[in-house]
Amino acid sequence: MSAAYHILLDIFPLLWSGLITGCLYALGALGLVMIFKSSRVVNFSHGNVAGLAAFLIYGFSSGTLLTLSWSAAVLMAVVAVIAIAFLSYAIVAPIMAKSDLTATIATLSLGLIAQGVTLLVFGADIVPLDLPLPRFSASLLGLRITGYDLTVLAVAVATIVGLFLVIDYTKLGVAFRAISANPIAAEICGLNLRSVHLFAWTVSAVLGVIGALLIVPTTFLSVTTVATFMLQAFAAAVLGGFSSLPGALVGGIAIGILMNLFTFYVSPEFTNTFLLVVILVALNVFPNGIFASTGGTRV
Amino acid sequence: MTSLLSVKNLSVFYGASAQAVENVSFEVSPGKVTALLGANGAGKSSIMKAVGGLIPARGEIIFDGAPISHFPVRERVRRGIVYVPERREIVGELSVRENLVLGGYQISAAERRNRIALVLDLFPEIASKVDRGAWRLSGGEQQMLAIGRGLMSGPRLLLLDEPSLGLAPLLVRRVFERLGAIRSAGELAIVLVEQNLRMTMRLCDELHFLRSGRIVGHKRADELKDETARQQAVDAYLGATESEPRLETA
Image (cartoon, rainbow over all chains, first blue to last red; front, side):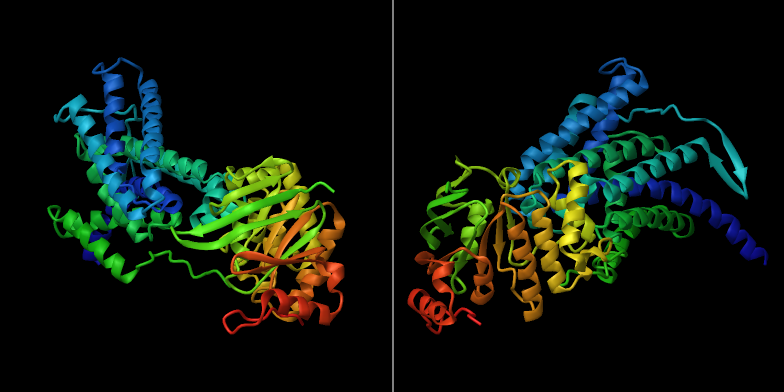
């Protein structure tokens, strides 16, 4: 009885913090899935571009580049990543027309360029990036809930619900789903495929910025911080099947919780190894993801 | 009557040397149904795709007096040319209603609502399933949805590629009845690719016979009213070799 009680006392905080970090992984994974669904490209530059965005916010708000208010700095960074998303798409689109695989490899180059630019402008040092988050903590049923936790939860829920509403209930969402499922059908209906692709790339970039901003307070900001975080997001996307938005959400939360449990009960040193094992197992056991569709196209 | 569509010396190549269509020319008048008949591989679908803008082609395509060869698919749809492909290309993951929304993507929301109502009136078979996933529809219902989706943008020219393909005879008759209703409702011109000559005869005004990528004959529908004349035309223009199966004339 006592042992079980102690396990429960340990597990609830682990599940809670896993849920919080899982929401962040889900945001990153959703960005990857948005691009993959529409363009059939795995965007390996996602993490490095989001990392550059976090550095831009630091640069715009700290006086390194400009001295702006925090919200103006965020706005400027969002505009910058949207511009980068447009530029990336302009570079990748002609390659996509020839080979999805080559286009995917091209995103690796774009990621390395983004990382190079970050290094060039901001150097290799770790920098502080504080967010204006409510600073409080409260205890509830043995859980320590902080202002950061609630902010992450609120932002993630609002973002994900907003995204799902757009995808499920708007004309643009219908176009996005049509292009994902059957680009030929979308084309013969007169859709502008490029504008729908750009919608996906833009949303993905903004999701990356949100994810990057919210992950930084739990750690520090270096050139590789956000890219490493995106490894978890990648695992979440794989677990969710890489082409399912709900799958990415559930995959993100599952990865967050699993990593927390592994770190606490097994070893904090091998969490990345564990993550790679999760990816391999997921690819073998759920090759189409945990949300693999049971439906199909009847001919 | 002034042509709505004028195709002049159209040629389609796949790769560097495979020529699917060779110097094909024909015209389509407003409100008329023009059939392209031929065995598999005769180039019918290639012509349709070229006119719809889905594949590159040489030659001239003039629609409503303006050359459109250089326009992408979406501009051709905007001008009133809609292609309904032989494999229907329904988006199974979307509902029936969402497929119709997709067809009317370029029109206003109010117009789209009206057109959805019109299409569902025309095809009551899919009206009761409008919020179901399109993948759950039967083959005939999917064909009706494909045609309905094609009508959503209010086209002036519908390119219908083998609407009877893979359908049971009863469903073929039903689909053609609806096409007849569409035809008599307005000024919509149709280019119809079919292998079912008998059904085609119920609809069309003009017939072009294709063989190995070329138009080898042309008839008005009133010249082929009886079965013997139809069979003679098929034999004369298309032949009946082992590699080119005869058209279904019954």
